[in-house]
Image (cartoon, rainbow, N blue to C red; front, side, top):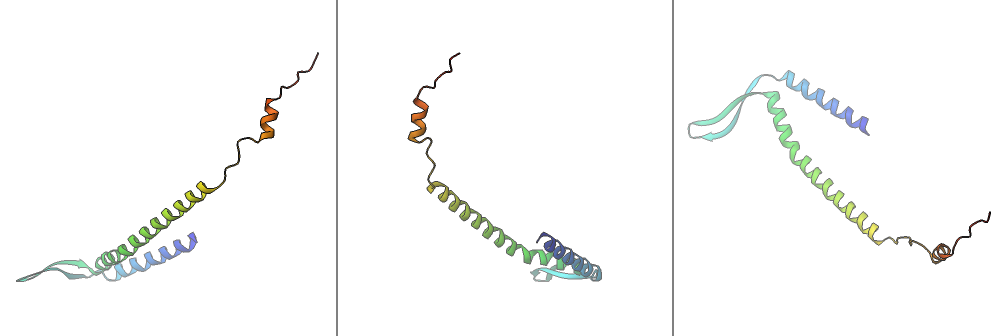
Length: 109
């Protein structure tokens, strides 16, 4: 599973780097409308794509982390409830206590 995940990340990185390298022309990005026009920045297209990819992936990553955290809490609560309801073995049985109270005989020399 780790190998597949690593391969997917390598392929995605190669595709993204190739896209950025092929699209290095600058393009205006309108940030805020004003009465006389827009406030804009001149950014390379590849950087724009990378920024908006991260902005799009961030909510899903946060949702995934929140779900994972919630499930870990539920599993921990269930494990604690099972641990609390299991019957603990007795410390000693009555036969063991009787055997411990009888004096041991010392060998005669």
